[in-house]
Length: 178
Image (cartoon, rainbow, N blue to C red):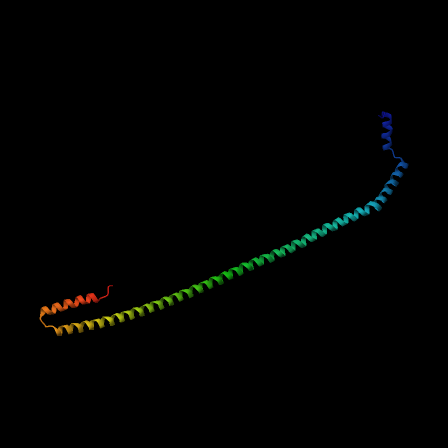
């Protein structure tokens, strides 16, 4: 431990100006400043300048990328809108095509049903005409048979009733079952 008088000397020397010590302190400081400037300051400043340039380049690159991304986003939005418009147009075209096909099918069905109805009417008319012709032929044959029998038999009323009854019974036998 230091005694109090030596402390006083040591404290007093700090306050007193010593020209030799001051001179060497300044010389040492200048030599150290020159050495630092020569050996350390240049590389440190170079590193700082490189770092500043790298940061500026990164900022510029980020700005360019952001602008490019914004441009790409706008292009994507335009493509999406265009795709939506194309899809809507395609849907309208498909709807119109489906409507046209539906109308064609309805018309074809109507034509087919009209043709079927006309064919059915013709068939019915032909069958009706054939049935009428057959009925006429049978009526004529019946009338001829009745006239022939009447001519052969006597004309009294009782005999006529018997002939008509026989004739009706024969008709019932000849008539096809429905």
